[in-house]
Length: 517
Image (cartoon, rainbow, N blue to C red; front, side):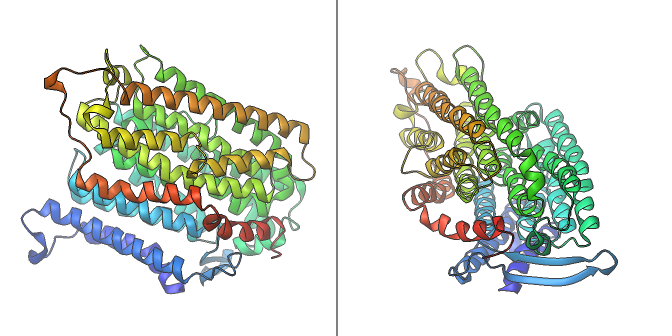
């Protein structure tokens, strides 16, 4: 199992290097471009298969135990180690990353975004997968930082070279925001490691902050939290996200929303909560306040974009919805309770599935209409997807109601548990304040339903169209293949939440108790 996890992390990097090499004559086929895209599908498919085998071989009776571990000394002078492992917290994120990257590679094989050579595109996609998987697998603070930063360059180039209008300014805003946040985060990680005498995340979590003074914890949480909050993104550090999503190619938006945003919230759970609990308790009310402001802000921004005459972009609207949904994740973490943190982890996975599907669908609508502008799509009588492309319209409506938290679908459980966590926060936190945050978050769920139903009405419904406009390409075979797993998992997680909560809950209980199972 330890070799399997190491292969999952390193495999995409080897595949990225191989993508840049000339293809052997027997594998070129009719088109070298198709050959390298096929290489991307193959490598990501192998990594997904390995991740599934890892999940099947995982000891589900001990999800709180770190499994498939590798621990090799790397920089002895600083006690930096190549330390890998997975537990019930990181395993779902590893599988989600492998799944979404494979679906993006499969989608790109049939619908390659316009831009330079597919060789570079596939290599960047695989490098992005390597950095993301490593972020969820490493157990050393400095390795976490290196993996955290690895994803920035490939995502920058995916936006800048294969994106749409305004891609270069959006890419620059993305890289500058995240790099500046990362510099501050590095200072916090170094402070923790040097003060505690180790960068090992398991040792630090077991110590549970006992080796760090309150002042050190407060400074560390502030510095690390800023870097993680930028990546999450937390209001008001979110302004890079709408531009990046609007300009990114479809697969770039799927990976940015489905995987990269989870790196920030994962860092809060894996590093901040167990390593500096006293410092986290100081900042928890402020984190919760920013979280619920983000929920309301994101929902109001979406309502403004969905309003007729506002020239709102569908991809931009989904990006702002992510600000609101990730606000629920941060609220769950801020409660510092097993209920809230489990809700945050569940909402992470649900958001990856549902918003990944929404960006796939938004890209499909844009391909068919040539625009994602809601006013243009709606026109005088509505885009009428139900009548012109019923399967596409049905999938868009399904993703929308899943995103608004309809019971029975994945989006419901995470947000509900986050609100339950706020109802009864951890000892030492102000219950009246968190009850207020819960009420504001509850209002956010109503606003979320409002803007998503407006989008469905404007894009999916509408009056009769002229005969020459009636025909529209419905869901294609490759789109069906790429989207079906996301639909199925959204339903499965909604109807059977114990599958995921059974993994996360024992690990969260151990993490919040200072390493005691």
